[in-house]
Image 1 (tube, one colour):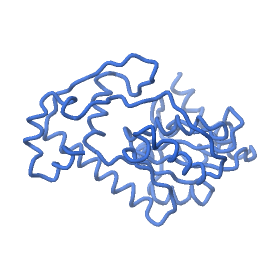
Image 2 (cartoon, one colour):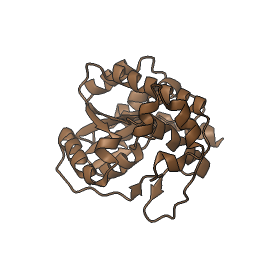
Image 3 (cartoon, one colour):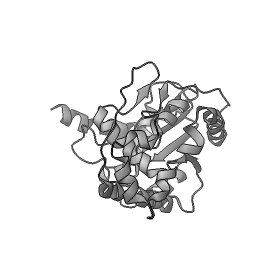
Image 4 (cartoon, helix red, strand yellow):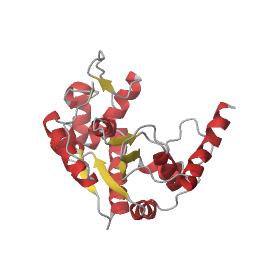
Length: 257
């Protein structure tokens, strides 16, 4: 019954899209895979009083069927947002559009969102091996994000080199697909390693986004930090095995990132 109520709940956002007036002056999409720093960036943006950066509203959790109109769903949410911010945005992972909605062509959907006033922020991660390891470590810890005030539990894992190669290749393919979906469209590109991983770069990066969203420049802050702060050699228990498998292959570059 609870799931059915949640399923029916999406219709209130369709009604809001149709019946309520616009309440924001700007809208954006954070287009990013998982484990790219999206929660960190969302938290940083939400430290600006004029911005409401929402969660993964097109996620599957607790939902029975698909979201029939992700455009109207997002539009309704922007009109029912709980606070008085003038800019509304949300995070969407590429697969959520193909698996959780009736969107057939992600590039066309992004184009439609742009035509309706949404600006696009593309967040990506260069080190796909660390991206894959981050997901595994989080699943083992049963914790996806860390806050500064919380005690941390450091984890080491054994890795199957062959499976890790497949996972890296999958991440590489998804990134190519993302860029193809964005081809010909104006967007701001944010790279995790260069732009937000280091605390010193976070303010400059957010100021670039604030300028793009046309809001006043503000000092940002966050209570989130990296879930794993150690070198790859310290994270992987059987690092020597992985290293041997990766040397003299296209995957060797990830050993030195």
